[in-house]
Length: 558
Image (cartoon, rainbow, N blue to C red; front, side, top):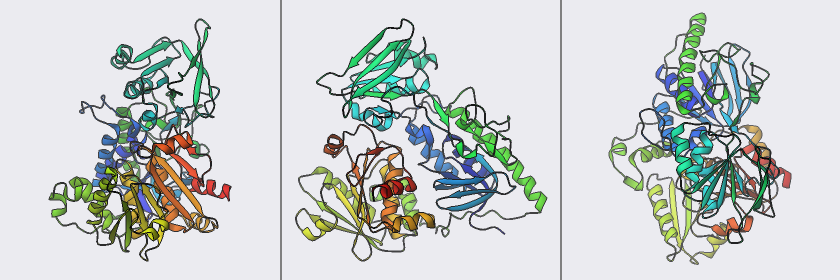
């Protein structure tokens, strides 16, 4: 019998390949679930400009991926952001264990993609987040007016070098070989750009410095000449971005399906792996060209072949069932008034975004209060207040309290007021929940803001009982500061995870801080990358974090 955690098809990975598979599977009326441990979009969502996707002259990665996600959802495919802990691919009915529960399906598509490969030069790990980065979209702004080095000679290196010219006064591309390994049109743009210098036959041996990067050692692998670069006294530091390829994210499956020597999942032309009912798509499999167009092709093939496999299984067991779409662990969404979709920019939101927010807010069943401290001398304070008014107008469960600075010192003390603009969340009893946004939650952080409301005033995201128990065992007060930039694709994951923990544990406070508005945080902690997580004032850690990883950091400090 069908239960809420039972699906025809589960897709692991919400990048381009996974979303395409979700579109095709949804259209085929398969009950489909995409599980992604981060925000949807994968590597493409961190790409500023896409100019080689057929039918689109130019677009941005985040925009294209958001459209693909909505397209998949429009066909009934469900999306769950959760960490996969364990998977069983050997049995006829596949089983996927996540932080949000265990799910089963007849077939699985593995579209987990790949992670940036590290180069291994001296100082790379020590200066990660303090000058060495792997995401130009996330961290480029930290090097405004400074020198930037880009390591790599492929598509990513060339494209990101062009993007980084928006920030750096000079971008130097270090290519190990004698030419670029990408389309000549892109290579020509790089070679002709007035702010870019390309050094072929050049390798990065070492970076060094105190708190931030101060110098680098380079080697010409053709002549053997070793040179040293030192940041000017005026700049103080510089940036190094590494784009030398990716490593497949397939470790979870290595003992269950066949992988090649480099760890990629082996498939045939139908995307079938060595295990029946298990398919793979995208950058997690070996391929000649790693581009969006090949990822979408993989996803489409994998979904259509999975459909054929699932139909055979159903015929074998005589399964006949009518497809219905119900969100994971939640009640079916009520029909919205037609006016919700027809009113343009009502509530300060675009119609499509407003409709999506209303879908979430219809599930709210408890009252919450958002408090902001208004400072008439601060333009951003006014902007945040207007934003919060628009959000509060969308649900009777959301109350807004606006106090002039110094008007209610008791509230300011209760929420630990330090910065303007700031929005803090109170529960239905008026107690501070520990969830706070120092900045205006726009860009990617709009999602984490809506999730904070949903976790406090609605059913909330699913979370395993084990993680709840671990969070509730915390005895000491914990202050989490998540320093973000609104252009960072990975930041909302950390913000949402930390604030979800705060929602279930009264000892945890989780504050999002937009370092674009509070540059003193950048200076205080020598931040050159986001997301940066600071636990109780200790040394920051950088990069994506799951709830489990954040809990481990908290427990380590207790």
